[in-house]
Length: 86
Image (cartoon, rainbow, N blue to C red; front, side, top):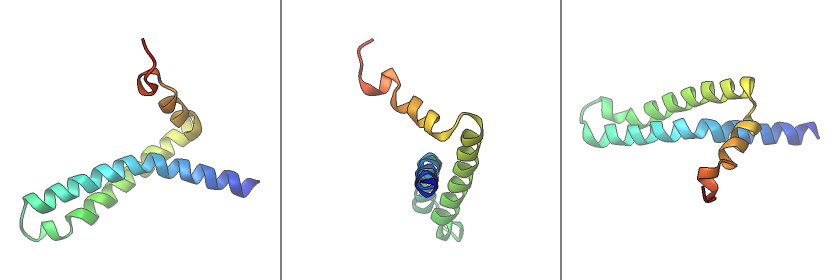
């Protein structure tokens, strides 16, 4: 049972870390296609790695303070997201 819990926690950690990673990927694509030169060749992997590192720090901070399941539960259960009338 401990393996299943570790697997679920890993998926929750990755789901939190994925958001900054995706943002880094978008910034990398923007830099690659709008600026020319040697910087543009490594823009996508560099910005994606920076986003993943920042996302990892953010996910660890959330894991240590309130917990990943509580954090994602608050996001999913928020009134503005589920379309409930005010």
